[in-house]
Length: 491
Image (tube, rainbow, N blue to C red):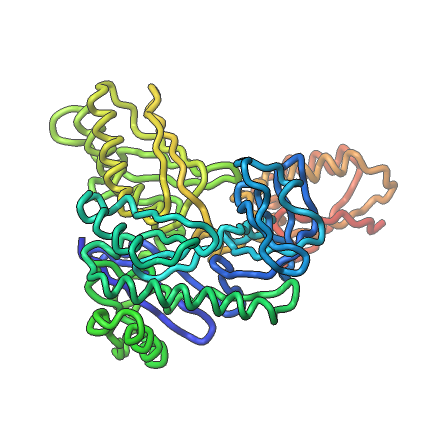
């Protein structure tokens, strides 16, 4: 599948879109006032050790402390002087209190952004990413991407790394290494080792807590992490960013220089490529399918629910065939929307119910195949008798809606407000409860609510006033939320 990368770079933000066959499938944004944390390395101090949670809070110099699970603590740690101290060998599992103490220094890397009220998740399993390799400086290991399937190629790459890496450190071979000449891989290996040595040197002069190494910005990461063998080009609309990319490519990826392109047309780049339209649609709960069916995507605190509907699609032959065709198309679009919206955690997909087991298997296979291009790790469970599919998708940052939007101040994020009729009757109940002897009262409320009472509920309202021996004066308050009102004694 032919892909391309589009970078919109401005002083206040960088936006990256990944396109496949001209369609935006992934979207990333990094703002100057809200810089990303994932990949940053910090000199941290343990604030609290929580034995009951097998975790610890680590002060890394930010507003929110980092959260460190016991599984993310390597069995070699930093002492109070900032030096490596290996723990006693012979035990492979440790309690958090055996690994960390309050006040202790740890070198940590952010693995997941702060989400909602949660602070960033951090790890001592530090990694440094290149285009072909990921350096694992703290333990001896060679891993290889599962997406490289050819066993002969896997053995070739593993041998290149094993013969050239120093003892005591490890590497993960990335998908981009497939078919690459040994000298390019070895060159990057040396660069990453040098970078780690520089980080250790900088650590000695970094305050505690403090930032030791910032992850490169989204502009550079676009070339380092997103450029693959099937990527046709990277187009950027800022000359300074273009020159930075050329410099990075010259030093580390010279064979990619010809794929970099500076966009200089008058029409904005993201408008020209249809990206703005795609992002706008990704913020809507409903997604139309080409056949006439549609998806409804609803996100809650606990999980994401996706409902598949046939809509106006009536098929050609029979109902079962119509359902299967809709579900097949939905499986493709669901994989697309998960990537574009960057939805994560538990995801429940309500496919239209099918009778034949082979049809259910076909839908699951189609979904699995469509998710193969997803950079985030996914896991699909079986389909239930009701047609529900449970899956998970790894979450490392806020999803698109969380990043670009905020809770509605009008409905406080509920997605709805009380109806005007409900509010009218609520006010009547308030009048019945009041012990005031005032004959005349004022109702201060939003003008839409006042108009509704006068036009739709005047008979009910008049009876309530008569029963409570009150007169009313309406006071229009355009600044009031539709649900807000105030009852004032006028006498």
